[in-house]
Image (cartoon, rainbow, N blue to C red; front, top):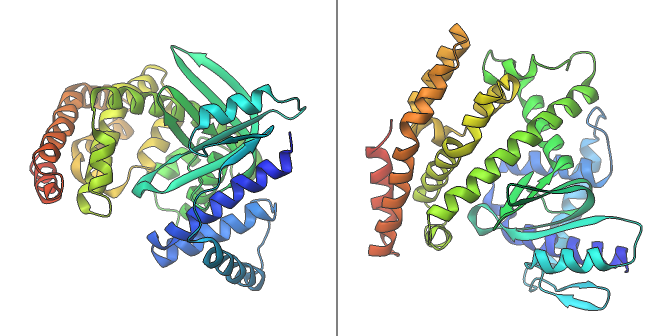
Length: 348
């Protein structure tokens, strides 16, 4: 198997995806993501100081490259002479697995937020089947796109990307250090020795959060099984406020099904703090009682406040998600306003 050719094919598709979708980000977010993409591509450590001039030159070159590939179709992936659909992750991984090579690899190609395609190929750290779910954990990444989501799932296959997870944790903790507010992120960071051992703390936090990511992806799969037609609805409401709301509703449903109950059962306090530190503004907006329960737990250390809130409202989020689908079925083109109203009327 020509590994370098395979990596180049995957990276080319990443460039095409970035060329088409990088403009989705606000300028400040885009520049931060490009800075960290530069760090990854040039293999700088998280503690290395980056040259602003060098990043600026690289960014110009990258945007020039994107202009040349933006209108290309996504390229087939070639493995051992087989030409494969880049979105058929199972077929690509089967072909890679059957190839004679000393390097264990894992590949994924799929769609994420706002229908952006994501591709990556990385060193395979482990593959396990747990309760019917196939869980691939990757380590060093050889090709990736700008966004690089740390966890993804398709059917009952879950991809957990250790390197991307570590990078995401670095970005979140680095952002917190700008002002150091006393919040959920501060509590999560205090569970590790970031002051004296940055790399060690990042590695320990990553190990812990990988388990939480698996829990969320299992919850996502379980939610998806109960919500047929969801992906078509999301495609039809892309780039609307309704899309942001729908993602928040489904995330709350998935986490109420599996993520939070398991974190609570395991008394994983560091992950619980990190979970609340990463709730989006929309998720906080539509589920304020969950944030109140979290603050109560921080004050009195009684986890039952969160547990009871989750148990009480899991059926609520399922109902709202199902009603969204009904609105979409009634009018796929004009359902966005009705979905927004539905969610706003059912904040809890």
